[in-house]
Length: 335
Figure 1: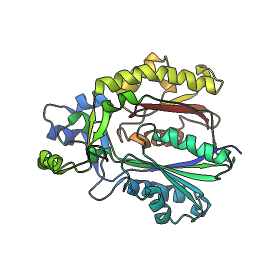
Figure 2 (figure 1 turned 120 degrees about the vertical axis):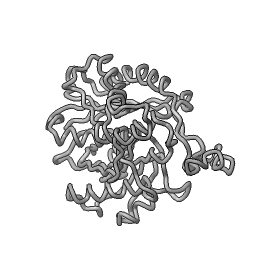
Figure 3 (figure 1 turned 90 degrees about the vertical axis):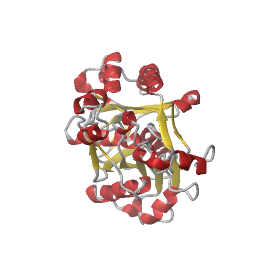
């Protein structure tokens, strides 16, 4: 049995934060400055009480409706987020019930960020090709806005909240073939992008709440990023990642019709494109209207590339993700 991507849908919270609104909070910035630095015009922000699993749920319901998917055929659900509902139980179990999936459905959480989508489809492919599942629902959903300090202009201009739903299946008809994966990890860089005060090690306590009392307590933790180190990490690791993906799929760079990377930052992506000597018309960026949506960024970009005709039937698309962890992974899919 082989594994294929059957459908992708995504959901954006209705509330959007524009560059103009950011400039009202940070008068030292201009709309042009923000756009030049990030390639983003607006990002969607969740509202109080609507968390990552909600966005994943809404994306799944859209997928069932938009692609006429029978929810009763789902036999495995993977929920990927860095904002799980609880430390226990598994949020995917809650989503199984909420989405009214069959009880013979496997359910796992994947607490990943930037590389979440590529890891999800890698695991889904393994489940299907080993005969453990036939239809895997992968939900990639993140709400980075809830862990950003209100006065952190660099992070607020960059990140947006979103949920994406992807159906990976053993059925070949009208599907996207999934190739071989290249993966990597270097935990020595973990502290360069971390949500402090968000887990068992160094949890939120009264001292933390008092420290951030003027901004609501930051009760879900605070994201902190060493932007220069993350930039250098991407420049260092992405070129060999691309070479590894191509080698594992026995392809030359010239045979790839389109490159879709984790939508980290439009400036960084442009630097990477030039470093890798990829022509602009073979490199897809979709950030202007959504920002960096973490684990949902690649499926959103893929859905839009297919929708606008940049990724056409028969095209080979190289997808590559990199970021928090440090972690990186990617593959080649055939539309």
